[in-house]
Amino acid sequence: MNSKPEADWLNLLIGLLQGAQLQLLRVLDALGLATQVHGQPAWPWAHRLSGENLLIDLGQARSLAWTLVFVTVAVVALLLALLWRRPRYYLLALVPMLLIAAPWPDANVVLVPATPTSFQQSPTGFTAASIAQGRALYDQHCVACHGADGKGEGPLAASLAVWPPNLSGPLLWRRADGDLLWRILHGTRDARQGQSTMPGFGGKLDESDAWALIDFMKAQGAGQSLRALGNWPQPIGLPDMAVQCGTKPSRQLASWRGQRLRIVAGNVAPSEDPRLVTVVLSPPSSHASASADCVADSPAAWEALALIAGTDQLDGTQLIADRDGWLRARGEPGKAGWSDDDLLCRSERLPVPTKTADSASDGLGALIARMDAEPVRFVKGGFIH
Ligand code: HEC
Image (cartoon, rainbow, N blue to C red; front, side, top):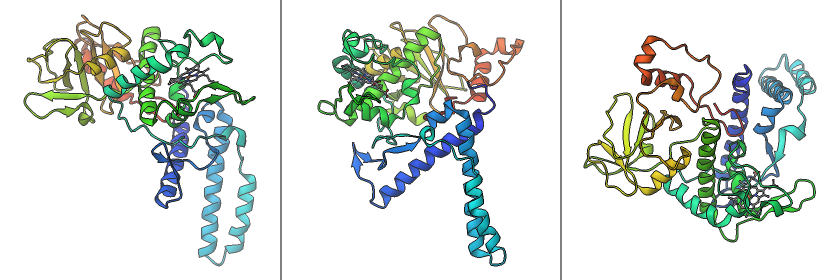
C-alpha cells in the first residue's frame, strides 16, 4: 500500500484533517468552551472527520481534497469582494458557483462517530514502566477474552456474542489512541443492535491504567508481528527508560531524541560507534556492566524490549532506533555485523538498493543510509511510513 504514488497527497490531507481538528479543540479549550473528560479536553461533537476511511476510499478522499480547494478559493473570493469594490458582484457570484461545483464527498464516509476522548493523546511517554504496569493489568482484566498473546483466543472468547479482535494486527494503529482509551473505560457496543460486546472497565481502572494498557498492547502487538512476519509492519517506538552514563546524573533515553540509538542487551562490552549512541541494557539478575559508557538496568526495560522483540531470549540482541525514536532494526544474538536487511520497519516505496562491495564491508553504514532515506511518517489513521 505504501508504494502507491497517491501516498504523499493523501498523507498530507489526513495530517491536515487531524491537525485542524486538534487545533480547533485547543482553541475551544483555551476559550473555556471544552469540558474536561479523563483529564483532557473533550471533543464536543458526536462525529469527527475520519482519516481511516479516506485511506480505504480513495475516490472520496479525492473529492474531499478538491472540495477543500474549491472552498478555499470561495473564501478568498469572498474576502476579495469585501476589499475590492469594482469586481465585487462578479466575485460574489463566483462563491455559490464554486460551492455548487465542488465535488462534495459522501458524509457517511468522511464523518465517523467520535468519542469525547477521540483527540486525546497518551501522557505516558511510552515508558518501560508504563508497559510493565499495562502488562500486569492486562493479565488481571483482559487475558480471559483477549488471550495471553492478544490474538483473541482467551478461554472466554468462544462464549461471547462477538469474537475479540486480533490486537496484534494493524487495528491498534488504525484507531485513534483516544478512541481506544474510551472503549477500554466505557466498553464497546454492537454497531447495529447496540448490545454490549465488551464491558467497560471505568469502574475498576482509571485513565492512567488505560493508557498503560494501550502501551502494553502495542508493545505486545509489535513482538507478535515480529514473530509471525519477521518484521514490524506497524511502527513502534523505543520505550523510554533511565540510563546511567558513568558518574553523571541518570537521564532518560528520550533525551537523546535527534540521535540514533543502539541498545545492546546483555552483559557485554560493545564497540562504540560514532554514528550511534550505544546503551547497554543489563539483564535483570546481574549487576550493571562496568565496561560500557552508558547502562540501563531496570527489569521493566528488559521485559519491555523482550516483549517488542518477541523473544524470551533477549540476551545478545541489539536494537537500533532512528533519530525520531522509532525502533527500526534488530541484530539477533550471535550475529556479527549489520546489513540493510536488518531494517525491520521500512517503507516499500524505494527500490531496495543493490548491494555493492562497499555496503558489504560497511553493513552498518548501508543500514543507516537506508534508515535515513525511509523515515517513518506516521499519521494516526493514515499511512504508517
Ligand atoms: C468479556 C470479554 C472481554 C474482556 C474481559 C475484555 N475484552 Fe476487549 N474486547 C472484547 C470483544 C468481544 C471485543 C470486540 C468488540 C467489538 O468489536 O464490538 C473487544 C475489543 C477490544 C478492543 C478493540 C476496540 C476497537 O477499537 O475495535 C480493545 C483495544 C480491547 N478490547 C481492549 C481490552 C482491554 C485493554 C481489556 C482489559 C482491560 C479488555 N479488552 C477486556 C472482549 C473483552
